[in-house]
Image (tube, rainbow, N blue to C red):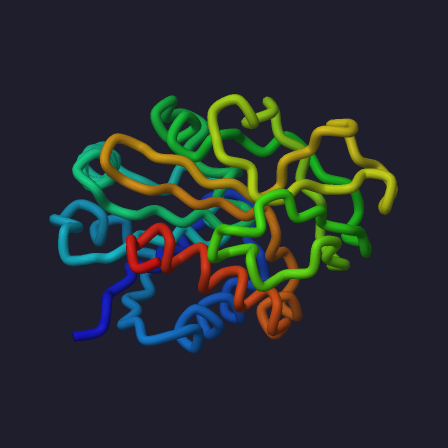
Length: 215
């Protein structure tokens, strides 16, 4: 039986027009059964049947109190979580979420080309990427630098684009453990065309399979 993903795309703040492209990409990534929803009730029921829960450019407060409790219990007991792009702009009112994800979104410069520096070539999300990965995105800045609490997989080269605000140490992709669970986050994925990029799709597939405990 194919591993099942819960793909959650609810927004109560800014809504990315890339969400449909993201859903299509996740459905096409690999041998997964994908339940895509924007209904918060989907997280109020037991999540144990899912290999991972994926927040794709969610924004604002998107969970109910029972949903928060279910998600936390799922992660602590060994579930997988994947946050893509605006997942870092989500659940600002829930301290656990910020700790679980690793950092919260602060600001971003204009959507523009830049360079991603791959720091960890052993992780499934980054091992197939070039050491310097040229990409076009929004280059999120975060309120705090998560490096001390996460395993940084890739960072932004702020010298390669205009308007970066974090300086020489600018984590962009990372993973961490939460209880018995696994958390993967990538700040990339703003524009619809990102989800058509073969390298980005491989990046997402690696992150999801790792979080789900499949690699």
